[in-house]
Amino acid sequence: MKTVIMKYDRDHKDPGVMEQAGRILRDGGLVAFPTETVYGLGGDALNPRASQKIYAAKGRPSDNPLIVHIADMEALKVLAREIPENALKLADRFWPGPLTMILNKSDAVPHETTGGLDTVAIRMPSHPAAYELIRSSGVYIAAPSANTSGRPSPTLASHVEEDLGGRIDMIIDGGRCDIGLESSIIDLSVPVPTILRPGYITRAMFEDVIGHVDVDPTIVSDSLIPGQKPKAPGMRYKHYAPRGDLTIVEGGRQAVAAKINELIALRESQGRRTAVICSEETRNLYRCGIRETIGSREHEESIAANLYDVLRRMDRDGAEYIYSESFAGAGLGTAIMNRLLKAAGHKIIRL
Ligand code: AMP
Ligand code: MG
Image (cartoon, rainbow, N blue to C red):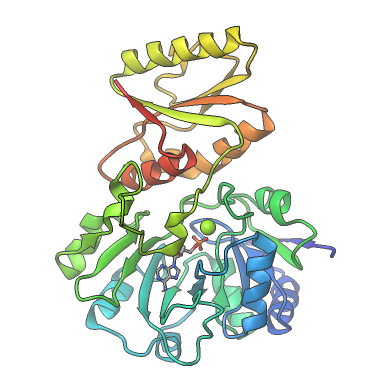
């Protein structure tokens, strides 16, 4: 299949792009498009064949449900069996934006889209390309991240092309995604609202609107807790991983740098290609061939926005052993470390 790549420029819009993309979606095809979080791989959410195509293109296990993207509140009534008060409050504050809510699904939503579950994940994205695509297609768009399952999520159209070129109908290239990490997911189908995936919207931000929320314990633990399965099925799978062997080293700046330099020297003496993921503030502390500066510790947003691109660059650089600093922090740090720990298969050295 030939994948058509079309540019989207929010200041100079070409209506032809959205018309063509909308037609593909209505015909049951797949279109990758930018959102404020990461690129999504879209198909008609109410068409079971389109959902099956999404799983096939990504190599995604079919029990890992898709998020349905909408452009107005009317859509909620079509997709959800009931709409709790908390959903309205959160939508009012955070939609359109990087928030996904889990609600009991209506009969309109096929089980192919929800991975067999009776709940459905719904989000109203704020990126204008996503909004225009939903509008021009006239469908609700099921869209997981537009990467091959297991690889880092795409934050640039070139990442999508790398993974899915030749496997999908179209890629809308809207440049770099602002946030760079997937949406926060909150489950509102249970008695106590529960965060299933951390993201740009933090626990404190949720609690400010709806009071106490729980956090799925599997999000914060270093390793899977025996007998406990993450409630977002997708969080169960190894994710975001570069091909090289990634280890996180956590502790004071100097101690971390000393440890990483020691590990690099050891691997290099074995003839291995090494790389380090560091911050602007610490890059001069490392003696290493490949140093990837992920962002500034003063701006967690920069670290989130660059994370997946840096992980993909590790593959392009052919890094066999990768050492990363820890980026734990109160705000976005939870989401960043959730992804980084998964990418590292939870390998972390604490000093
Ligand atoms: P992605 O769009 O690739 O970030 O994947 C969607 C994420 O949402 C996965 O981690 C899914 O497991 C999660 N998700 C989607 N629908 C549901 C649902 N009904 N219940 C719980 N988690 C869900
Ligand atoms: Mg994904």
